[in-house]
Image (cartoon, rainbow, N blue to C red; front, side):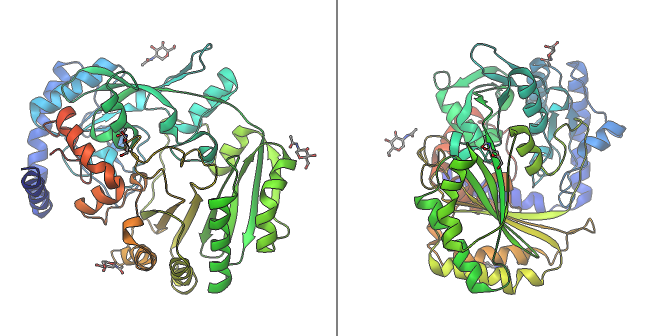
Length: 482
Ligand SMILES: *[C@@H]1O[C@H](CO)[C@@H](O)[C@H](O)[C@H]1NC(C)=O
Ligand SMILES: *[C@@H]1O[C@H](CO)[C@@H](O)[C@H](O)[C@H]1NC(C)=O
Ligand SMILES: *[C@@H]1O[C@H](CO)[C@@H](O)[C@H](O)[C@H]1NC(C)=O
Ligand SMILES: *[C@@H]1O[C@H](CO)[C@@H](O)[C@H](O)[C@H]1NC(C)=O
């Protein structure tokens, strides 16, 4: 039964894709009138179609993947979000939440035409309980502003989904204490370890498929001492590149302490090892020296600084961004979540870097994060403890290719796809996962389900049937009910 439904869903998706623009626009218009009226009657604020605010909100971060929503709700209260979900149900349109608006596949705009968008731009409060230091954060908050608010309020810190603090304190989602969620039925429920624990499990790794979070409660940590560093790695030939990547992954696997957080950055002209050590400068030297000795690295740059400075250094810009801040880009991105790579895969990856990628003149980069390994707080959690299925991955790669012209060429996709293929064909493909935060539009729906959620997908499918039986929160590549 479940597989028949899955097939029907796939067939429906294929039909939608086959429709021409005119018929899609026509059905979007009809849905739009119904949803608009419903939102107006319920007094839910909207960015009305054609207004400057509407044009601004639907202009995607990744201009390669633009979509036309049925309507854009701009709630200021949780009640508005509930009413918006009920309007979507009545009008039979799917709902998508948009907070930062940075989904690589424009999932915040639905990832396809015709969704009701719940835009959280006007819900971005951050407060900290002075006794428990638990931060309550609304979904429209931008990470930079959250960091500044916390530092301003309590000298505390918070961090990204995976970020430079993850080997020490785990993923952001591990630090989620509870969330208030608007469900498909339009109710508000709390999800935590003790309340609706199955929903809490699903939220942490596949949240957007299960409801709309209107408030997050996060654990916070005291801001640490910070040593920031960068070292150049060999970049111009295959063998030295492969040798250094191998040394770095082996070091992460067996010796890298949790206070040491780093990544290899490769672009058209250099390979670098960059990161942060949380602790005293002397302890940093002790931790990194074995790797520097093995790689015969001398020089490099290190400095100790404040936590907030680390964040703005690696954010490559100011943390205080206006909520209306708008940056656009035209790009294609992929990811790989892998265990220790076999020698042949490291060689194939390095060969592609030196002999293929460096001939591509677009603006591309690769980040190889040392996600797991010795002492990593991420790896210490079981793969099935939350919906995030990659706890045990040693390496997390982001592959990113942008065209500065503002249009990504149709011939561009084979570049990064070929890089992943070259790596994967030299390892056990069952060891490969992918990260939905680097949503990859070139994956089929089945591939996305498999690579994003691996062995957690079956349970997600069951929970989807419980929490969103009509598929109100469905979107391309999202979890589908059984
Ligand atoms: C945000 O916080 C301010 C000050 O505490 C409060 O007045 C306002 O109602 C809050 N807004 C929301 C949407 O919770
Ligand atoms: C910061 O760096 C300076 C200069 O290298 C060093 O003397 C100092 O001990 C460092 N401070 C900490 C807290 O690691
Ligand atoms: C994870 O898997 C283990 C071993 O199969 C099982 O005992 C445990 O209950 C699972 N945990 C969850 C949260 O499903
Ligand atoms: C990657 O591998 C798949 C499956 O083998 C193949 O269909 C695809 O054409 C390959 N893509 C590139 C760009 O090499």
